[in-house]
Amino acid sequence: MVTVRCMLTIVVNNNWPLFQLDVNNAFLYGDLCEDVYMDIPQGYSSENNFLVCKLNKSLYGLKQAPRQWNSKLSSALLECGFSQSKSDYSLFTRNINGNFVALLVYVDDIVITGNCVKEIEQVKSFLSTKFKIKDLGKLKFFLGIEVLENDNGLCFSQRKYCLELLNDFGMLGCKPMHTPLEMNITVKPFTKNGKMLDNITVYQKLIGKLIYLTLTRPDISYSVQCLSQFMHAPSQEHFDLGLRILRYVKKAPGKGLFVQKGNNSLLTGYVDYDWARCVTTRKSVTSFTVYLGNTLVSWKSKKQPTVAKSSAEAEYRALAAVTCEIIWLKNLLLDFGITCSIPVNVHCDSKAAIQIAANPVFHEKTKHLEIDLYFVREKISAGLLNTVKIQSELNAADVFTKRRDKLTKLEVQFWIASNIKLRVDSVISIKSRVLSVYC
Picture 1 (cartoon, rainbow, N blue to C red):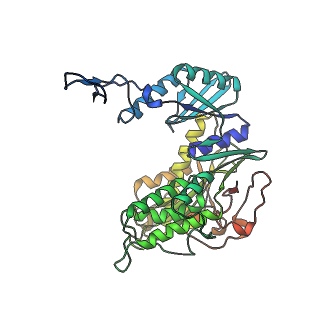
Picture 2: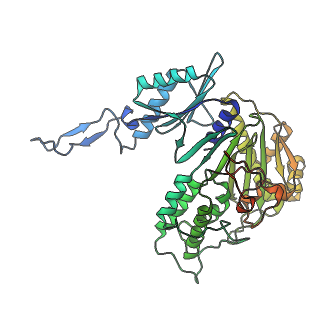
Picture 3: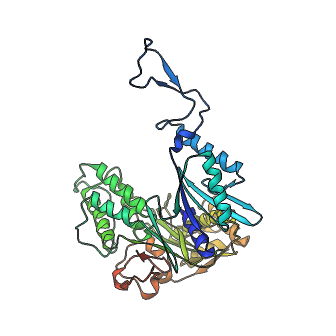
């Protein structure tokens, strides 16, 4: 989905057309490269009861079907002159005499864009000769995500998905909440005094659907991250907290991300941490956000794999995580023909972590750090990154490490699609520069 957000940002900044294609019966096109046999279909009568069928083409239900379809489509696109991205194998690009075409594939759903409509139509015609293609026109709905265009840019949300989710759990008529979790709440594991949830499948279904909802709702990422740690042993309290998130979603089911015009070559990162947040393991939480121009394209809220001995170490580990993301995004943008401006500014509110990243001298506080974390120093010395000190109140990644009830005036920037009015006091979700919209 980071690739999707990057593509949509580039489309808006360059005023490119955006189309969607669908392949009918995609898995039936795969050619099997190994011997696969199946039983005689029902209704076929034969005196020999030991007859079987040997498959030459894949069928739905075969383990080989998705892989063979991907191989078939990739071969066709390579024949058409496309190059497969090494950063994201679902992305195919072609640049002939300045005519650029990008094609993004998710199983049988294809999103295609470029700077030349004629070239796009040629690609559509070529795919129609290879497969049975359904041209869905301009991109409106993709993977449960609604895409809406207006004069100022493009917004995408999961309004329909939210309403279906609320309906599945009987929360359409519930009372909305202003926040996904209570202020400074600590989600604890199941205790002896707590009540174990009888049907954990319902809880797993709820959290799984909420995880997918975070594709366009970064404001619930931290809350879902906390509850997803108890998928195998949830309590009734955990399920109630999950329902509270649904009540928060009920307040604005159409909230999503807004893509506005900006600088395609400008990457900006924000990083934060929450030291020893987990009361059981005392592991810290890593959070970061990455912007392409003015658009939020990547974010994460995740518990660190090891215990940090100090807050500076926790911040430095978070700094290493956002460095990996920026390097990957830089390589991904090269496939779109975009060279990022370097150094990339990474905003961090820990002065100690910035000093550790800049100072190559080993001392007592850094002896225990893994060697792989020191690649942050290498990237800084190479001129790829530039760490910038920022106040915690202005750190856009801070909302992914803790739950608060109030935000300062500088902590929220709203971009509204069309002429829809929005009360500022009704949105308590995303920090500075995290773009949100009511659709």
